[in-house]
Amino acid sequence: MSAAPVIAIDGPSGSGKGTIARRVADALGYHLLDSGALYRLTALAARRRGVELDDAAALADIARGLDVMFGSDADGEEQIWLDGEDVTAELRTEETGAGASRVAALQPVRKALLDLQRAFRKPPGLVADGRDMGTQVFADAGLKVFLTASAAERAERRYKQLKGKGIGVSLAALSREIEARDRRDAERTVAPLRPADDARMLDSSGLSIDEVTNIVLDWARE
Image (cartoon, rainbow, N blue to C red; front, side, top):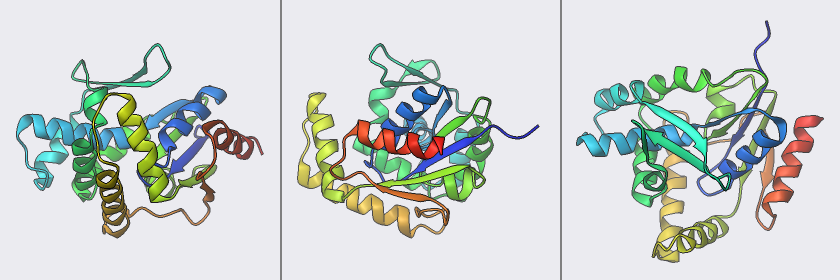
């Protein structure tokens, strides 16, 4: 039996890949994997348990034992539970995001999460978003998209998102954090952020969510 089809959507932080992946999965009736959330969950669980973010062995143990559930709220927005607790808001903080970037650079953690990620591949298909879906986790994906946007636009989007939730943030600080995270992700020795050789490049700067979704859907249906 052939494996279920996979659409891999990779890209830097704030490129909109999570939103686009969710829209594409809904349109096609596919399963969804938010791989970045798994690293955020590992970082969050580590912080709650007092585990240092450079303790690779302890972090790998946490990753292997994650009790996680993905779902959607009434508005169709992603909702994530850890150990039965809704931790969606905590996962979206800059602190957790920065922790996830550090955790994701550790080979034992990536290895621990690999089988968990691949288990999401079920009929009728999967849309997987992350940073190494097309290069590492699903290297045989039928469609690989590398979604990006300028650092300035990504910071602006994040700023509006957080302000809309009543969270006070500095646009300049967000810009610095996004640029620093880009460097960490691109320069890490384990699964660095880069497009797969056969990925289709899509710059979402200046495009609406609907426009980007439709482009990916057109590619998927070709």
